[in-house]
Image (tube, rainbow, N blue to C red; front, side, top):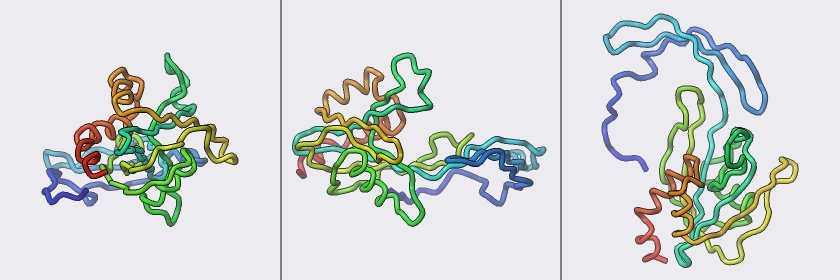
Length: 208
């Protein structure tokens, strides 16, 4: 995905003075207060500022697509951050997981596809790397499209000792797109992945 385009940024890490990092909480994720100064666009240094930052491992998402049958596989599970959602805290999403020490993003994509959907991935295509919320979180997401054979996929999956309860949905691409347009796939991985797939779908199907 690397393209040889010069960055627009005039500043880099040397233009930040990290004065102090204070750990506020440590658990599955960490919370830090970071005091810093940074170079301003007028060339001067800012006053010290404090920012609370959610520190977490990087993540991987993979949109599972069967080009031969023109179907996608998505997973449904409860999401603690969506408990106040007016429709449902159960969300329909691409397969996803966190990067463990020693793993590459591609390793995670293949592992999570097996754990969450019981699915083997053939070709794995990297789409984008992005920060979901860089103002408050260190996490960077690597998003893939994984080409699969969706025949026989479905059922309930997940890692038992992680209390995962994950239902696999296999549906036609047109149905999935309609659900996206209706606001039912309301997460960044789905939105980004499906807009990429809308552009590349004909090419992927021609190769199948």
